[in-house]
Figure 1 (cartoon, helix red, strand yellow):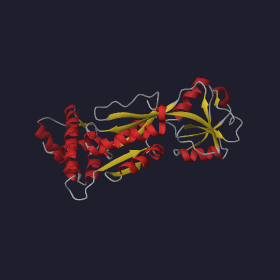
Figure 2 (cartoon, helix red, strand yellow; figure 1 turned 90 degrees about the vertical axis):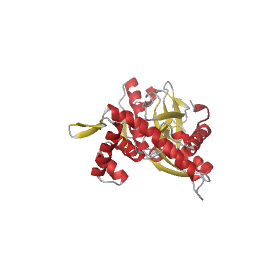
Figure 3 (cartoon, one colour; figure 1 turned 30 degrees about the vertical axis):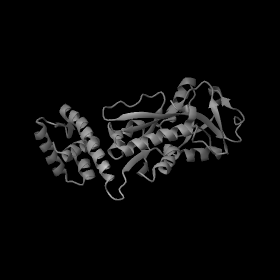
Figure 4 (cartoon, rainbow, N blue to C red; figure 1 turned 135 degrees about the vertical axis):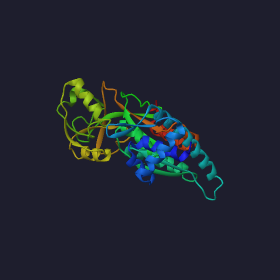
Length: 300
């Protein structure tokens, strides 16, 4: 089987449509369809089937995608090994991370590996359920989930836990609760809240707290960026739940919520076999090293 046609099959599995596959590979949709038909003839089985208006992978197609991942991982390793023989060649690793995780982990990795690996990093803030889709465009994806949520299970994705980051209550420095080290849920019934968008980790914790106490938290503001949330709290606009290693402003006080075990788990996602590339393996090791530096005994 031709490796390029296997790449087209994998892109189709990642993107979901012929049109999107054609766009990312700079081909026409008809060329993509033709190459997939040729691959089906090479395999001797149907790889695609119509489901209403959509074209989907058959069971055989999904099985072949797993093998395509293995073949393309081997090709990537070979290309990287050849970089050693090219003058001035450096392997490139594409990393995606949610913003606050990137701020904690990526600078240290870039400093440690900059001389030997080209790090191409970008912010990608998506819900945990959608994070694995980023592997269509990145070699390594750093994501996060509520500690009570199950880890992703997929034969096309390898997950590794980096660290556990506790969730604390953050209040303005002049707030009546600011002088305490901890608070109870009963103390929070009449607070105005600043939170993240619904469905994102952290907001799930607030929802769980409301279920446990019966309170209906008044959320007046929602932002993805924790720096904005912290600034809003510092400005007296409300209180917030924030990851422990992110809250840094001297204008806020951080309190442990008594009786609530809440944290977000940092995970790193790769394709199976991706760590066979020396560069990816070094990036993964760098992530674990940075997580150990940041989190200390909060690592799982």
